[in-house]
Length: 541
Image (cartoon, rainbow, N blue to C red):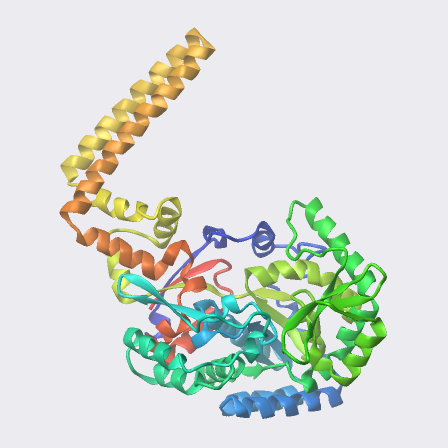
């Protein structure tokens, strides 16, 4: 799997389903999408911008990062990068919610992109280091408690089970059932270093935050990825000025967000994060239960979390004494993060990029600057066995995606249609062409007689063309029944490249690929995360 010998293809990012128009416009434009994004998607100006943060702040930050990363089992390369950070380096930051067994493929694609961008920036003349921010304070456990792996011709989802409601993801304790999940994962992945790493990280009694931190740090140990869990009191104290602004300027910031929302709507973009009249940018951790509860404004100008009422002074007192109890929401989180880290650029996925269009107003009002956001590497990894099936059936990745989106059975029918004999294809094509020619001429004639008669002719013509297509499908289905391997091949291709009608990177667990390609895969992804493909990349492994 030498990098220089890899085959790759680049496709427009819009080929993938479920992407917002805001994200597509951002990544496909060659000029800044102002005022939402001050810089273009693939800007390099940030590489030479001066690194921020006072020296004393850097020292404290480096001390905390060194302590954490040693506990995560980080290697020498990460510790050397922390020293570079201490001495003034900038940071390329990315992050993700902590998940079971490392989560989907896109998680390591984000890490690889941050590493590549930091490497490119360092070559440009000023040192940068890659940092992975653990979103341990998020509470959407339904997204974090499982991993999906391909098991022959089907998908298998391994799940921790019913999660505690309201708890922060990073604080969820891994139970004894993880041993059964590791056994199931082993049956799918086989033995080897990656399974050993999973077993070492995801042990009963550890939190998801601890387990994931160790996993991502050691997966990218050779590349020097720095990992940060900012949920502690010490980190929150470093970002408390941002939290304070969110308290004392709550109404002003909400108005600014509403104005930005109207700007987005005026340009035809929908809201990314809804901001209601009494919402805020903060959550409060309950001291007794540990639940992360949204802080909302009261009609009288106070605050409440669930049934507990607080004054602004109450929250400021909590911020001074227990800053870790106040947690930023999705819009404020990047601002909070960039008050703590010397972030030169942030690497985000489609949703994060879209959020930044709203977060930008918070950046300007709180920090007086906006961090450039860069799209992560978007890729489908094609293994040799799947590549062989694509070649045998003359099917491309866009064919797989487009067919699956039309109908789950469409890909199998496409393979069946390709298996029809040359004589059968000629007869179907001749009949279809003749029918189309005659129907078009007849419809034109009937339109010339009377508009109503012409419309009736169009309807009848459509029905006859439908029946012609039905004959093609019948012939293809006959081939599928006659050669059952075609259906199996179609299923295997879909499960691996577009599982459950989702892009591979969003559903399949990264450990599937790590277990098969080992230590070579992280470096390969770093190499593929350059700017040669400003879209979606197919990579033949």
